[in-house]
Image (tube, rainbow, N blue to C red; front, side, top):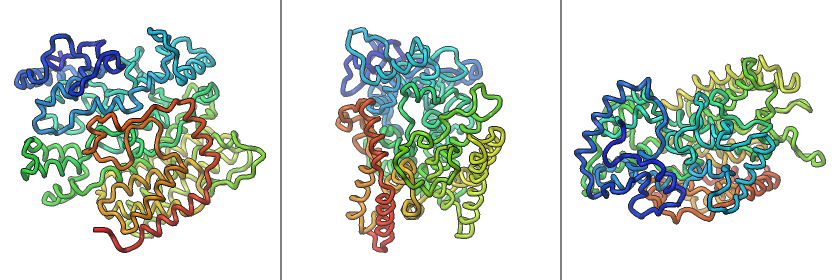
Length: 587
């Protein structure tokens, strides 16, 4: 039995607490706590650790047979106030459930659940929209709609049933993986010493790895045929809102994020070790944790490793990696859809740029120079995933010649895809599958693996910001591509440890970009420059605002896209670059 003692999961009370039916106290969310469960001050640490050690051995022996989903009840019981008294080294904040409640992911199923409420209240606007979509698609029961719950509630392709307590939406196991085999072992601090490969064998997803995290997020936010996660053109026609472009780190911060990056833990560890935080002990097994969970640091000399761990800017690095992974995942989705073995008819129109067909026929708009000029009547694939890939090329190139060489290789591989799409409507499916695979493999070997292995210090952050300003100031970018560039620029600029002397002039430009491109996501609980020590990670409810109805947000977004001014964006980016490149830096 994996859950014992004070971390026992009591069942349906979890759903009631999260839904707001049961009261939530300021010290504990009490998810799944049964009547009579001891209060936090009555927990016996030795009893908990003994149970964990027994469970770890049993779980590993049975890993292949028991790997599955348990639901989030046990996670919440330990990752919140009930067990903070036991977390004497504060390796994790134990506020994760409280922060998650401010995250729209926690409402992913609630948004689409059009089942009649037990209390007789009316359905929300988004629930009414979901009901109408299901009616048009002949879906009789949203609770059995696998094509919807694959993303809205983590119903995996290989399962005949949805996961436990799927009403929680996108919860712990949706991102961290099925916990049946690793739940017990990971409660022991020695888990920090285990390798990523060992944890993966037990089903845990390595979300500390920015590439793996991006893959996990993009499986829904872009799509993944193998996992049954796909918004089809039929769904769009029935009323499903269009999937927006996504810059992974900007979205993560605005959820808001409920974790700390390594450089933040390094600083916390230093303060504790030097006595600046006398109320908590230094992290146990911290050196082993760095070694096992951030393997790129092994490229450095041992004497430099600790310093490098604190210098690496994880957020900015995630932006650069996310841009390359987004293009790869979008290409793989297109290739999978074009595959002859797929049971869906080609072309799947959702794989193509919506504006290729849905545009104002009376208005003459110059095509963006960031997109290929295809023949009339030849829809192109989405262009926004390509917006940030030059940033990855820049980061791994040692000189201008190397940058030009990799850029030319990318242009050649992309050009083959565009030529195929121009030759016949929607292209030749067999060729498209081969061409997307070829470029996907190139992105992995030439960009994603090298970028992931290369440390990202403050100088790299500054250079990335300057390169983004240059990219944005060149040519004409469509709305979604401009959003990618602006999201990335804002996040990377936030990660600069020292701001330029012109910061006072740069901030209004960032605010202008945010307004012009709707960079602040509706219903998000975080801010683009939030740090983990701030109020967001503490679960402060003041960081949230009144929710915006989905049916109101979509028209606002579409109107913003229509009003987008590519010349204004280019001028703003040029001005940003000029200000950033001033030599004087604030101390």
